[in-house]
Image: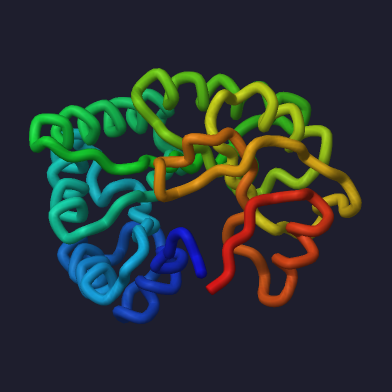
Length: 219
């Protein structure tokens, strides 16, 4: 059995609702979809909440509190093209409002340094680590780096970031390399420090797990 569940990429949820990806889905729709999924699950639910559907950290926190109240245990929250400081402010606001409500939520921060080419190739690892430190200091619980695929770079980030690392099964990922680390467990807010495969292409995830020694749960 699986220790956790995801509602899928924001892209898929947006399309299913008749909207384009990248914050076009109304937040009311996103919350309603999450609530419907949480209603029937018996495992923790984590969803892709894009940028929080606002540039105002306080509004993002209120949006996320609605997810918590609906039974969501974790979110992906991305920086995209926004300044890293803005995402850090959103993380702080979410954690503060959740704590004031006597609740918590796992925030898996997604940085698009690789996906959007936000730094020269030789500087991407350093930029990821700089952003990750900012997000961790703000209260982030995990890091997702879509687009990173070189073994050495994944190892460097995993060893240095101080947060559970999610990577995407991406063309160019080098096989037959073990990335060692404790198993991460969503049910206790990733108390371990491991690397988790995320958003794999169909049929590729078992090989990714085999070659990289990643955490993999299957229903």
